Image (cartoon, rainbow, N blue to C red; front, side):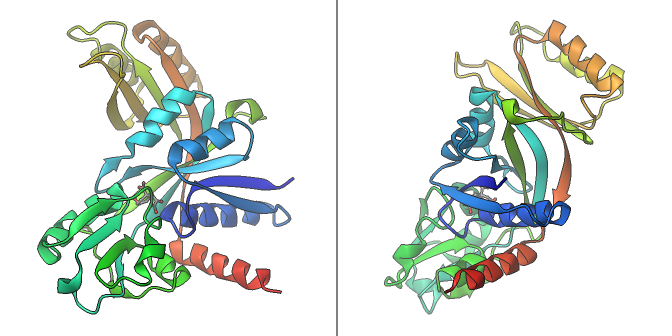
Length: 302
Ligand SMILES: O=C(O)C(=O)C[C@]1(C(=O)O)C=C[C@@H](O)C=C1
């Protein structure tokens, strides 16, 4: 059986690098397993493809160490409600400024994904105060437009620069040197044969009332069960102003006795509760992933 992984394209995105790193991981467990990657123009479209059975897995960015949550991923996960987290993949993110320009003062516009623009915000303010910052759907969406225009630049990876044959004017422009992003590998609930075991569980819930202490009750369940929260993030329910959904990452296996009991208690103090699954975290080496991509493209030559 071939494993197909949906990712945010076009070719050369950080999500594709994370998908390549994850497929190396899959091949280490079963070297005969063919893995195909399939690009989609947006994160929701990639997730929808897995929900509709078009791909086996989707890999999506969920949280960055500098900029925090990737809200499109959280919102789409809540809307679909049928995708489960299979693994988390943490990967270092090093941005470069790609451009045909020979000096910074010639650059009038910088294109990139809003997450990447934010991760380089201080560097951009300091070094390119004159440039317009233009948001694109991914860090590679605008790269084709750089080839014959030396007044524009894009923020993308070194690997993308090689793929699109573009020079890197400045390396490592991210504001924080240990900038990294966590990705989730998602699978359709119905196609999951065995429950995945692991160290982490992610949930989201809404509250039955908007009153003092309403959030304290679910948090108290975690405190009494001795379950550590590694993240809590709120998103608007989109029903009315001031109403929120809470996304939490727990350091527990939902299948353990403690996890099961906490989930049962949460049912009594939440309005809707969705368990996105239990999983482990793996780290990804972007240079190994890029090397894998190079071998694949060499093999594809006639
Ligand atoms: O645009 C890309 O290259 C992506 O893979 C998306 C994305 C994100 O949404 O966070 C992934 C990792 C980096 O944090 C920057 C951008």
